[in-house]
Image (cartoon, rainbow, N blue to C red):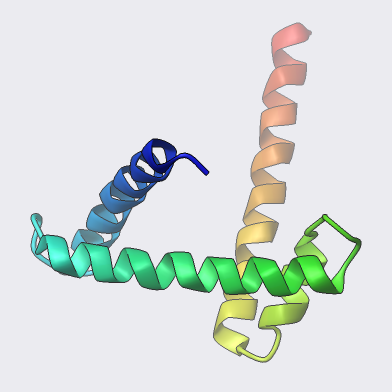
Length: 104
């Protein structure tokens, strides 16, 4: 992949990580090395999980069920993922309701 593309992605991820670090009690301007380390850990984790998920399901596809299957041993992650999925469904239903009201 193009190095420029990767750098742009890292910068975007770095901004998100800084915000999350601050949200969890870190300094508003954390050390660049800290952000880079967390970014590297996150990217490696996502790579490992997505690689495992792609190998266990349909070739070339990752489903939500694949991810849930991979994290089921970690109850905290599994419960949080299920909670976020339920919240996402509720948001979709609410948006659909607003769209229907808009057209009526």
